[in-house]
Length: 497
Image (tube, rainbow, N blue to C red):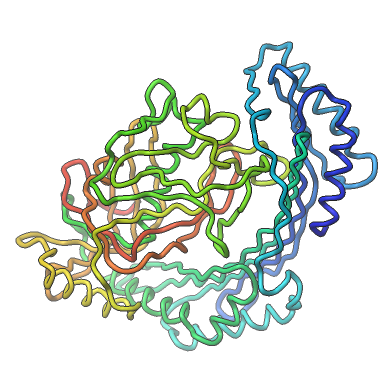
């Protein structure tokens, strides 16, 4: 369903809800997706899908809420769903549910955003996309036959319209696409894999890759590195000076810090006290900043919240001091933070929760780095720059961590455990490589250890964020690399799990 059709439908549902003395939010969504996966020169899967529907969230005058959804976007469906949501809200009020009237304070927003994509969904026929992806896959297999390669492509279009009884009506489109290469190499009876991606808004990402081969070159670089990992020794556990790449920095900012400032979990966060955000707390050195907000064309782009508010760019940490959190309209006041339009929902079937969009960790103290080079040439450039600037800590290993393999965080205690793809000791002129190791510690200690950055900002580290049974796209990054001092509360070493 197109944006104008969704707007007309939402307006009609709001008209049907006008007799209700409380408050109503209507969220309608239409979603289309094409995806494919190739393995060793053959298509394993090609799939197309779509979904549409709407949800109604009703609030009584006292602030009790009820939520109902339907996958039927047609005449007569709106009135029935409004009635159901109102009944649930009224029932919940009698049950003594938690009350919240903050939605009445939300500002009215009127917006109709044109799609930011350059190519409309479906403009390139599926058969042509299959041919393009096969060409890219075949070219990579020919360029690096030592690896076993899988290539996948995914293209999604989400159209949203959110209306409220205060007259708010917001509609927008979120297009996104990603091309991925996953390779596996073997040596001396061991296997190591690598996964790299290139994301954008639409099929343009395929044409760009066909022309400049950026992802192919990166895939070969990382596959060669993975081969060396198979032959590499294990690192001894310890506390080392570290250089982490922007993918791992995004993981640190997102998992270990971003979730800790979402307004609905302040009572369980290391950055909360008595359910309130600990504003003014120094969490890092001066010059360290953490920012979250939508970036046009990004994998996690969303210009408005699922509650119909403008999605704001928030400086969470400014100059090393905790300044703000990610607040949605229902939990921000209780957490003592402003509403920032942080509410996101996976689909019309879900009630929004405060979530990150694109989170990036930036520093003021920055060393220049030449434009992107082949991996080991870039490692040598890093060593040279650190030596020349006096940033290479002598008499010990200075370990460069490459890649992010996920991990977990306890937001209540601030403990984190992450994994990387591999490690290089840049203090040694021979640049020895080590097997992947566990990167763990306390989030505040890790932030305090950051002393500088290398290179330009890179914010396209993508993933999927799970919370409350919902999964939404996430992204972010930092400078190309971050420098970290050794810290007794931050460890590296041990086998990858």
